[in-house]
Length: 187
Ligand code: GAR
Image 1 (cartoon, helix red, strand yellow):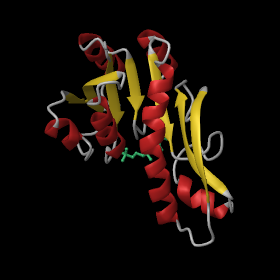
Image 2 (cartoon, protein in one colour; image 1 turned 45 degrees about the horizontal axis):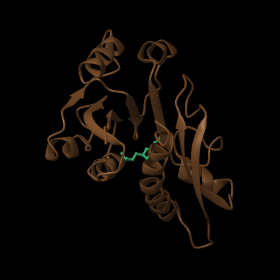
Image 3 (tube, rainbow, N blue to C red; image 1 turned 135 degrees about the horizontal axis):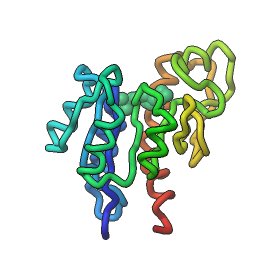
Image 4 (cartoon, rainbow, N blue to C red; image 1 turned 60 degrees about the vertical axis):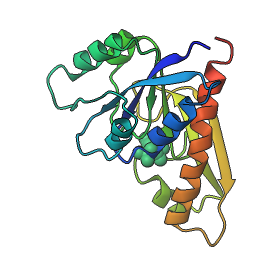
């Protein structure tokens, strides 16, 4: 099986990165993680790239021409899919057009509800009955773009912000790989 060269973008802990690295080792899983890009050297997730000998690069979005730097390195590694896994920056329309290949994002809510930050506290404040996660194609707006799949669970009276976060992230580790499989099913 020819696997799709993939780059994972991160900003933080990188538990989705860790999960995707593990999945990518499975014979039938369609991607090979060739590169990790972080917008900060403080992202804990970089350690998963290091441990697994995956090349990584820090590209601060405050740098001049940071998008050109990204495009160059994506081209160098022949990247055909970008997965945003906790990457807390919005990509510009110009970048999306110039890159021109698939970019997907995972978000810890049932989009279009609760875009942006502090999702779990807002879910509780709004007394939602259900929540979950969404994998979607990326456009130039925050947590926007066509939805690939959503996974949900019912919130119980005992749930707290912490337990909702734990349950949502557990679902993310299933949803992201499933979404990747679904987009390459017919390729
Ligand atoms: C994940 O829960 C992801 O859904 C969220 O950041 C977390 C990253 O966790 N992304 C967003 O909120 C994007 N708007 P991780 O670094 O442990 O994978």
